[in-house]
Length: 64
Image (cartoon, rainbow, N blue to C red; front, side, top):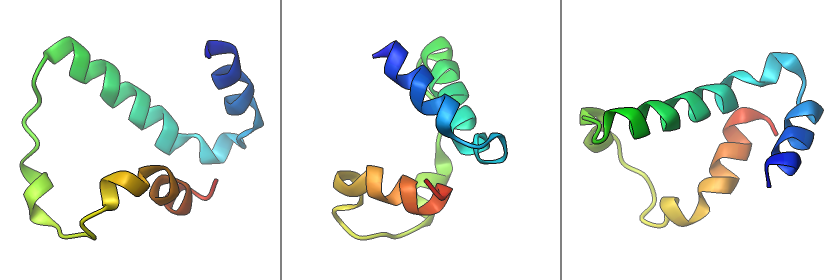
């Protein structure tokens, strides 16, 4: 899995890496801190099944 991730990252143009980098950094910070306070979660509305389509949503917003 790690090799596949490295391979995929190597295919992404340098200018487009920021969203992935921020996602991974956030994940690691969350693990270090335990529970995170995310007050902005309730500040927006989306389709009820947005969590089921997260890959599609991330791809459309990041240009992958």
